[in-house]
Length: 190
Image 1: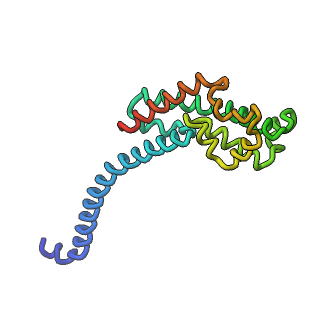
Image 2: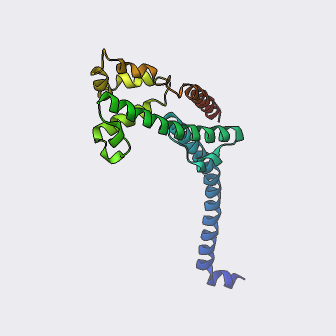
Image 3: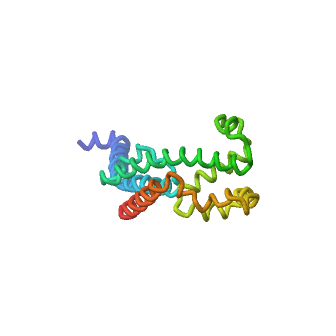
């Protein structure tokens, strides 16, 4: 036995080092493995929160990180409402901007490429701001949109920012804001 050890001393030392290395690597991997999913899961929940704050649709693959079926269902409903409201308010904003600029709605509004870029930006801002409860304040504080409104002061159409949620979507907006508040409170608890 001694001769075997003496002849294979270098090989046995390498095997020992390899086994020790594998053992410590497996311990480290186990620790990393248990921490990574928790951090990754929290990152996804934070991403969901950020998307809702920004009024973006949440990818359905993020929902697997949520432990509660009710939150998942609420986010699916939020996604649907957000997509529907974005379309509705994009049409509303297009109509509003075209009326304020005294442009012909029949031609350009249906062909997005024909809308001037500066007006597209204003339309996008109005439709994005409309998804917040304080839409009027957001619209009025935006300098580009304010230029359009200033041209209408004294005119009846200059009052539209105060009525943005009173258009046909008012009942939907109240439910939408309640849903967002419910989701945000649920996500904070996770």
